[in-house]
Length: 425
Image (cartoon, rainbow, N blue to C red; front, side, top):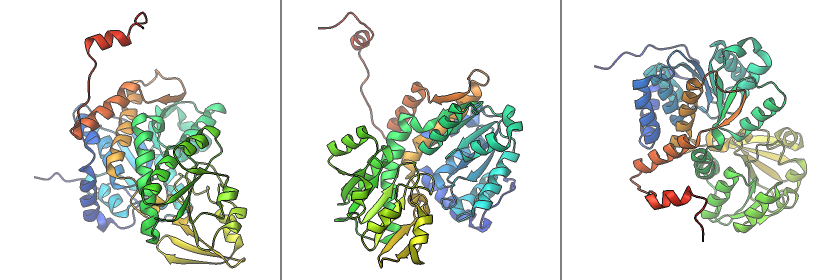
């Protein structure tokens, strides 16, 4: 007999989409064995019992499994969208109807709705915040100081959010521990490189149906996300140019076989531009002016500030939709610039985001980071904390096991050797 799920409060686009969403959530779960094992343990041990938790994330099929794991752990959890264009409306509906999780997320929601949802979540008086970009944490620190004593900690899995948390710490306003999920090896090595690499190109192709082979693809930023985009772009036959501000990353890109140059030079050469820097106005008016007619620009960084769309709009004589999530800006110089996904995360705006196989590890880190915060409540000073190495390696071990892959173990002699300082030549 199926248990009845009590439907919570919610704000989703169409609650009748729940059956479709449930089917897609179940499909994604096929490739999330690590999080499934954590869900099963959480259901038995209830490590988050009595904890009020809010998660500001991309509301996707993969995030659904994180939300379900948190509920299994006993958390009183609310889910809101971290990006106006990343919500999958059928998934939001299913989480409400089939799993009894309050969701406040609509694909295409405006900024006022987004900020209203942030405040609804904070009205929940959370003990733990799972954040994507640190908007909720920043709002709490700036506008809800009376709630700070309730906070056990926060977790963050974006580069943008970590930069903001570090700035808060530097300014002396971060008064609780924050888990840096973004820098866990089983997150950035795989989610950023393979997830962003594949899903970004998926978004570009879905939005435009262009052939990338033979195109010059300019990748702004050569962090782990940029490496993934460059790698996958080359794999599809693209000619890759990398732009960078960091000399070490620039020389790495050169040695990986890519051309490296300033954006001022790349602007006139690129057919497709992808920003993955976490900074603002990486592509500016002087770059739009120099671009080829019909050049395509998109962003795969967290916020929609990497492309200076305000200036582009001022330069344009006409802006029109030419395909879903594809806008053409006709410039006064007679050329046009094509913007994908309104400058927001193109992999989530125009496609479905990362494959579930990589989010399996990322969300395993999120779930275990929440457990770590509760287990160590009162023991951690305010600051940024890395995922413990043993947790990171256990996630990797579980993933390998699920994939049927075995690895070597050290012999007793090898253990003795690596723990000795006297052995040498």
